[in-house]
Image (tube, rainbow, N blue to C red):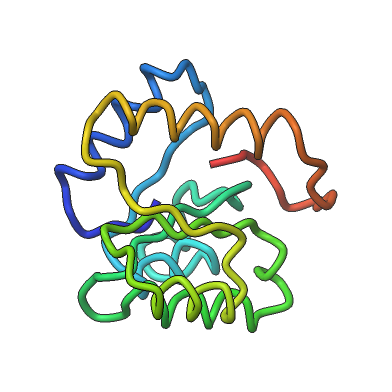
Length: 144
């Protein structure tokens, strides 16, 4: 999950637990850090940085925002098959259109209540981890 807001990250973690998702969840604070994580660069070169099965991406982050990160992910043949879900406070039509044009797999406006966030996380888990068939990838260690 790429999100610069520590409160949103903690709520997402709690919502995953409440929705009984057991997938490991890793956090990065902006698009640059996300790309470092995905390419196992910088502080992720030596540590554990598994290829995620799913990326949750906020749009409004410092340094490199979610739109720029999405563009980079979907332009990279090694990364473009990772499902990328935009999870943001925006509900602007231009953001929705831009994200789908850049290759987002889904666009979700962050729920206002914790109960609704639990429902969204549960639905994401049920769909992406239990329903769809994702491409086999020998580097996929975990679904995040």
